[in-house]
Amino acid sequence: MPMPHRTFAEVAKRRLVGKEGSDRVAAIRALLGELPGYRNGPYADLRKWLEGELDRTRIRAKVVHRDSLQVRREGAAQVALVGPPNAGKSSLLQALSDIQIKTGDYAFTTLRPVPALTRIGGVLVQLVEIPGLIEGAYEDRGGGRALLGVLRNADAIVYCRAANEPAEGLDVVLREVAAAGIEKRAILALTKADDLPKGDLERAVAAASAGPPPAFEAVVPVSVLDDESLDRLREAVWALTGLIRVRPRRDGRVDDEPFALPAGATVAELADLIHHDVGRLCTGGRVWGASARFDGQRVGRAHVLAEADVVEVLAR
Image 1 (cartoon, one colour):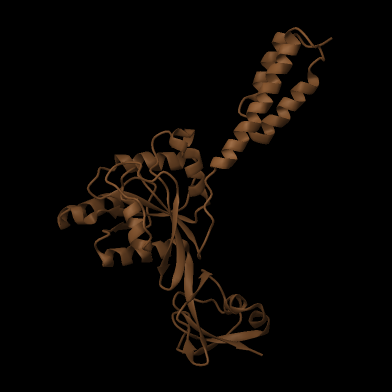
Image 2 (image 1 turned 135 degrees about the horizontal axis):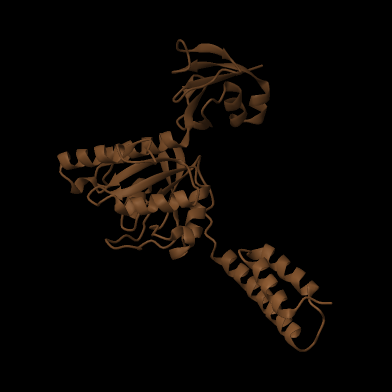
């Protein structure tokens, strides 16, 4: 005895609630398999409805795949710039990376994530500007879920707010990021710092530093017209990555470009990064820098390196 068609319709709707993509396709196929094979009447209507749902789900999956926002990772780390609309993110990214981006003094000039590389102390780091997040982004308003997905994949976050704007706009962004369950190391860049007198800027930095959670690891006032402030922001971004810069020394000469290593990396790991054969043959090294007791100290393979160390790898 088949289930009454009205009951079957309610069961079908409940089974499909919240399901998308392949999960929804599988649920629809299971329901079709449970339907009696009548060619006419209410069960035939239910079959037609489920087959229509199957087609719509497949089309929707193709659209989502086409419109998904993925940023190919480059450099030693990926750091996202996020904030309310018109927070100066595009101008900041352009100043840090020298790429040309359409900018304007109005909201939503940038509509898709924009990646760019900046060099920090010799190491390339990828910055990704996320278009302005608005209230309801977590519920996909303004395509927010895809944007939050890009943010979720980043290693760290630079929140941006214009120094002369109230905090409410950024508060909206912070709520949406929290609702998405995204927790990353983060700093706050107070952009357009040159628009405020020095005293007002100092008060804005103090207020942001003492604000409610989430706590920022640093609050950095920055102006695209001030190279020193841009350099300070670069170093704050580097601190967010959790990486260290180490320069190899070969034949008495120090390499211009450092290697980026995770904090706690050893001489053996540096050697392996230089070349697997070097790593295999490494017996230790000589170190100049913060991790050494004296310049040129001879250390073993397991010696833990520090930021800005210079290392001569020794091999058998």
